[in-house]
Length: 393
Image (tube, rainbow, N blue to C red; front, side, top):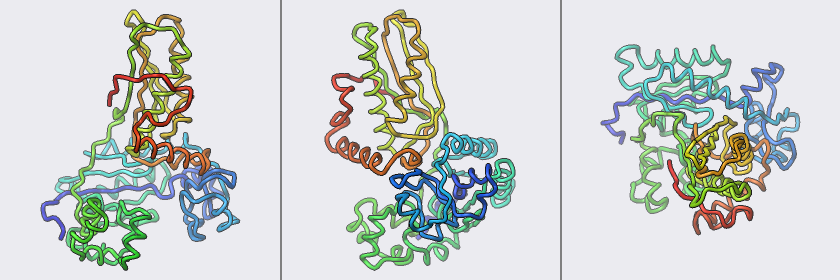
């Protein structure tokens, strides 16, 4: 069933237990011990854990209270997103130097399209040498999968862990995929997994042999994508990564203003709107920029790098601080703008060092209301009455 036209060579690279690996670089005594990264209180959530902790059943997004109960001897570390972001960017810089096309899929994983490189260097040899360079220069363990598309390469990486490499040639794709659990297919969440299991579908082989029409009836249009992945088909391109990718919004006032109270309320509304867009698109930002244009059209911008996030309460203080630093001239303001850039894909689980399950649930509830009734359906009281215009992306 594999698409014969797919002659690409795709590498997937994933940093093993990334948060724990960074902590072990700074404290070698953690090597070999069960380590949990996350909120320190029982109300916190696991953001990452070592393989030693996983053997006790601990996994990411688990309530910390449950993780402690499963693995009472684990060392719990709050985590440092600023440090993790720095190491993530180091790895990206190394990949950017060598890879012809690469996509930063999340804080700890990358896709590389090296189609054609085998004619000059050999794809396996080239990928191996890049992986060894990353390990040598950063000290971080990293695994890779090499195949004809993103899905098979990502699954191969999972099977290569920890700290390994696995190449799956075109003719080996179905023998490789068939015996694996359907949970290995990227895009199958817990709800879809439970539904398929209730139908007696446990292995990729079973799913791949089902009529695609039947899978579509059960799972909707997404079922077609999942069925194709089960058959080793994935035409999704590697999207060239650029730190210029951003979302932004700005407002030009009808009358030039010096009403700082109103401007602060507007900044809140802007941050809320952009943060919601990030979460909807499953993106995280690591750079905030604020723009101020005065009545004489003199324009100034200021930006600040931050740990990856998509939460309002993490982005708002940075935004207001940048505005306060910019607005020193006490002149009438014509326009203000906010931009979030250096985006990567990822759901907001890496702020779990600070945020309780209730905080995360609150954002999810607010976003569900916005999804149903519109972006302005729910907001903080301070932002009521402000209007945003002139969106850009």
